Amino acid sequence: MNKPVGLSIAGIDTGNGAGSETDVKTFESRGVHGVLAPTAITAQNTMGIFGIIPVDPLFLSKEIEIIFQDFEVKITKIGMVYNSHQFKVIEDKVSSNIVVDPVIHAKDGTQLINDLDDYKRIILKKATVLTPNAIEASFLSRMNISSLEDALHACKKIRDEFGIEYVIVKGGHISSDYSFDVLCNGKEVVKAGYPRLNVKDTHGTGSVFSTVIAAEIAKGKSVENAFFEARRVLQDAILHGLNIGKGIGPIDPLVSLEKKSFKFSVIEEMIKFGDFIEGLQRFWTLIPEVQSNFAHSIPPQYVDGINDIATYRGRISKSWNNKVKVGFPAVFGNPTHTARMLLSIINFKENANSLINLRFDENILKIFKDIGYETIEINREKEPQHGEGKTMQWIIQYIKENYGRVPQIIFDRGMKGKEAMIRFWTSDIEEMMDSLKLVCNNI
Picture (cartoon, one colour):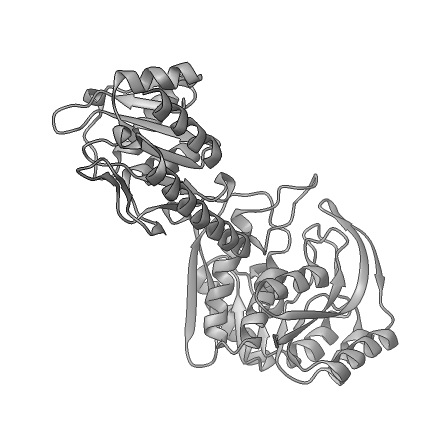
């Protein structure tokens, strides 16, 4: 495999939240081989930076020279560059295709770039793409940025003043419930909107965002398309921050890749489960008149919505001779009752990843109780009038408010136009299969 190569010129973050080591991790997650030329070594963790040793400019020059001797570098991403001597090395050694993340200050306030006038004169003039946040853009444009209009003005001003082809001003530091990043390219202004996430772990947002842009450009995408992809990846990475360390923890740039891997495993398990129930004797006795479906999710802590939950495209049905037929294939994002109920259970912080609906029968219910499952009955007559698709959410919310937790067996005796039903959820697909086998053996 011939991967494109991306070079990171930045400091080393010993806590692996930002810096060159995170850039390399992000490059690799996007299908780009990451190489690095460290500009400094920091003593750093989630609580701050406690020391910086800059790399000698002559050695930095050698690092870059050796990289370019051996690799065909498609893109260079520049993060923390410490002083004018290092700026001069980059000016001499790196010529084109440069994404600059202007890391002026760390999250704890530590100044990471000295000789700021030289930085603007040398490094910014080299940039093909510049990705300041609102605070950095305020410094570079010498104007206060507190709104989208301010960000647009600053974006154009920075681009014109420094002659940078693409400037992206990130709106995460602008106080609002819904933020925008803006891209100026001299022809148009492109905006990417996103809801603000109220989370603690945000270390590395600038590094990851700019590195994803660099990676996508290295693979041949336009800057505009790279911008939208970076925004999507960053939103997931922030949403699933790593929750490690005692301070501001790192985001997870690998989460998109991890979720794809989890989804592949879910599809494999759905095939296994479908084959299992098609061969399970007497499973046909558990199928209700409206038929069954099975919902299975990626690990609950990674579930963001219905698109992270798989069900069968068709239902689980029985034929005239009591053969069970599973409606393969398994697909994500199919808003069945089972998928919506599983999502509601997960949203209420239960460790659930599998759910199936079954025919209501007192004998079936008794077997589940004998196995050891706690049950709860829902009176559907109490269900308020609400929009289509809200029933499953209402059931779980009603249980939580009145019971405090969600038992694994939820049943109702139906109502006019609604068939009585048992719904069974587990935290593990193997538990689901073992329990259904026990029910079928004892019915």
